[in-house]
Amino acid sequence: MLCPSTNPRGACRMLVTLLYELESHLDSTEDSSFLQEMLMGNTLHVLIKIHDRLQRFGVQRPEPFQLHSQRLAQELIAELHNLETRSEVQELLYVLSKPHVQELLWVHDTVAQKSYDPTLPPLPLQHDLMEDSVRIIRLMKSKESLGATIKRDVVTGAIVVARIMRGGAADRSGLIHEGDELRDVNGVPVEDKNPEEIVPILAQSDGAVTFKVIPGSKDELEAAESEVFVRALFDYDPKVDPAIPCKDAGLEFRRGDVLQVVSQEDEIWWQARRIGDGKPRAGLIPSKRLQERRVVLQRPEVLFQSSRGLKLNTDSEHPDADYRAIHGVHIAGLRRSFRRSKKERWRNVESCGDEQIPSYQEVVPYVREPGDPYRPVVLVGPSGVGVTELKKKLLLSDPEHFAVPVPDTTRERRRHERDSVDYCFISKHAFEKDILHHKFIEYGEHGGNYYGVRLDSVRRVLMENKVCLLDLEPGAVETLYTAEFKPYVVFVKPPAIEQLRLSRRKAKILTGLNESTAVRTFSDEDFEAVINAAWTIEDRFGYLFDGILVNDDLAAAFGRIRAELAKLETETNWIPKTWTRL
Image 1: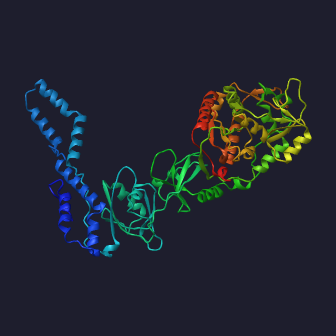
Image 2: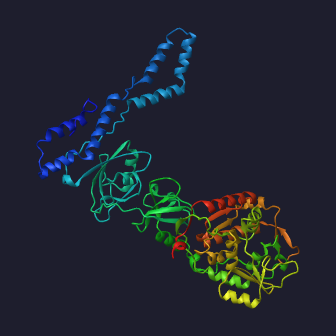
Image 3: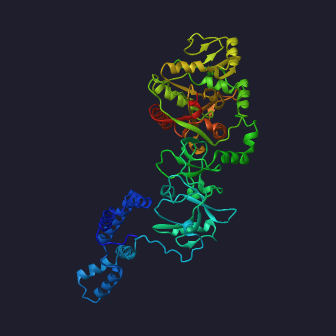
């Protein structure tokens, strides 16, 4: 054992002297080799350097000149009261009596009287266990939690370390492992305590925390961190989760956040970090199995009632005048026609039967290389939320960069229309043949004529080195959701009903044929229908969305999506891992 020395380099010099004196006595025996290896080992030299630094600090550290300055100030105030009432005396009394001066002196005395030297508690005199089986571990406590959870073993009844959070203080120390039995904390025995009673002991610890543990039988081999990245498809707050083993160890995240899952050893609680927050310690999140089981138990009607489809209008509500082109590009009418198709309505209801349970989607980083096609941008949202207006503003903001696919139709071409510009005009037989061969992303029937957007029309836009803009029904997005296209799907969501009333107070909507006027203003019933439809879409198709855009103000929403699309083309983004498999 090294003894304290007043010489700041005494330990280092003593080691050098020891090596010099022993040189002539060392031979080739096993004991001599062991002694030589130990004395010349890097670990011993590092410890000696630390010892010398501590000794040097002990000699140089400042000492407080006065330990009881507040009491001295009170004595001075009492003496000043006995003196003549001169202006200097009155001013000094005024300064010393001010509350902030008194508080400053109190803080000074508290710091001056406190010892900040870490101390180890004395070892207990009685040893009820073999000496080699007990480990004393001392960790320095900071604002960061230790990053470990404990539980009571159901077989032995002992308090054991349940898990070590990757990247936390306990994990970085390498001294505590899962399965270790905890015997006392800072000298307080914990064998008869519940895990909930041990947490306050740790919270009250100041500076170093000392544990007495019995190493578990679990292998202490370090498991390599996994490179699994997932996009969260639900919001999670550990503070309101009654099932989580330790709320402080939980990781809060929002839908759309990308998480790195660093450990899946526990099939119920995974360990993960949120990409971008810079925190080294991982947190607990529900595993995919746990989350999907919760959804099944909480919302059985979502999984087994296929009748919860989107409410679609009949195909006779609006006149054919809706089908028009704007600057040679069809924008509004096509989308409405699909929503009124009986055939499309049946197809949408069928596609909703296979309910996706929101949990996690495995993703990988993706950066568009120069020369690669741009990712198509798909806008999804309920009718009335402003999807068409956003698409139109994007298109008109930069027509050399953005484009929309030219839709197909079976109706007759009108005099002012150009083939393959306003529409691609084809026969009904050819259209139905292409439906059977799954060549359309979305199609519908209106007034006895078919309308549809085919996959090849998207490919033509991408071959022109432009960003293809689409607004689709949610059920049609999956047709485009492939490795070939890699679409970026944005869910346009309505704000609260108060903001809807304010932002759409002058907006008009088309009415049905049974109403007296062609258009009318929005009513509260319309706003509630928009919000309810948005809930249904997000609940059912949220696993497809890369981003959520709240359209509380059209100009502000356009600015946000324009900035996001600019980053999409140059920065790293995340795509489903299935798109990278050959």
